Length: 420
Ligand code: FA5
Ligand code: MG
Image 1 (tube, rainbow, N blue to C red):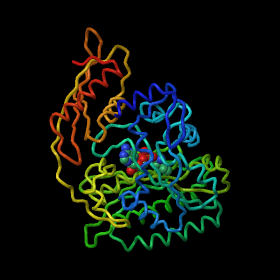
Image 2 (cartoon, rainbow, N blue to C red):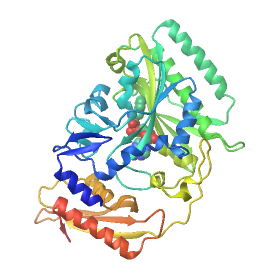
Image 3 (cartoon, rainbow, N blue to C red):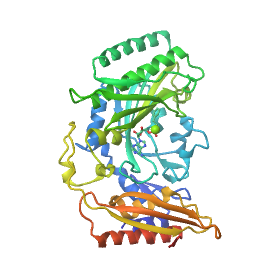
């Protein structure tokens, strides 16, 4: 059915998203499988783990306003330009982002709404939304995921800074009673500079407020179990076009450093665009799936999308419970090798989208096994291994052969490859 839908949407002049029709053009790369996910809004589905986690975060930032109702269809201007992304930023490419057409795209991050949130004039806000990125396929990557964006705005005046200092002291006192080990980086350094026009003292205080606020949230979320080893959190320098200084946070969990969020002191141009004057702000954007997988022990990111009662019956609204996997069904590996037509620009994300669009959530992961260019003909050969595995049932060999056959024929149809 998804193949039919794809052909229909190619031959149609419009794609329909949330009741609005958009004309298609040579930029259009949203697939039916992606479009079908847009109305689901898992972050507001009662007793879904992502909804519970959103609620816990909103509960922690209890005096922040929160919204989760913005449409995912935004202009590239809003997603990128308004946030000071350079014209040649790789995220803009059709290989990395989903375009509805040349004028509209699916937001790649919740930061796309920063300007309109700041424009409302609120000093403390949270925004939760589904975001879309073209990406690889495996247990921790899905082309749709969810982010919470948060920001706090202060008066950029001595009295505003006094307020920050008082708040910092309050937040520090709360944290000093907790079982958490934080590796910090300087608030400002030569590689993570204060932005032009900012008083370094103000910028430091605001960066410190950001860190203390998020450390408090992290402890609230991860520090639940008593008498455990201390929770390790590490702040690292980062780069975003719309914050300076910028930071990422990683949490040490089950033997690995897990990146959970990006953040920083908001670039003044963003506030200026929003008509906010004489203020200074911090902002963060965190990934709900990454945190939920850890908190609820959810082993595969596809599970958030399942309709299986054996998944949903294990979660109750507002509660963190440990997921007990129902039996893991056997994996079924199938390879496909092919020659690309000369001058073809098949990107790995094009291949992954084709597989998702044809086989849906029956694909667990896709790996490239081989890539070479024939020395004489200069033709490129690729080989991919697709792992078919349902989360809900055992796939028969017949069924996986059948799906794989469809993937292969779509590959021939859409990209004109020569199967080896
Ligand atoms: C951003 O999206 C920035 N907009 C965050 C930000 C907001 C920075 C405000 C400064 C100020 P990044 O691409 O690193 O940054 O994504 C943020 C978080 O989203 C990541 O830390 C991760 O938790 C989550 N995330 C990113 N990509 C994926 C993915 N493919 N699957 C699941 N979660 C993801
Ligand atoms: Mg990141």
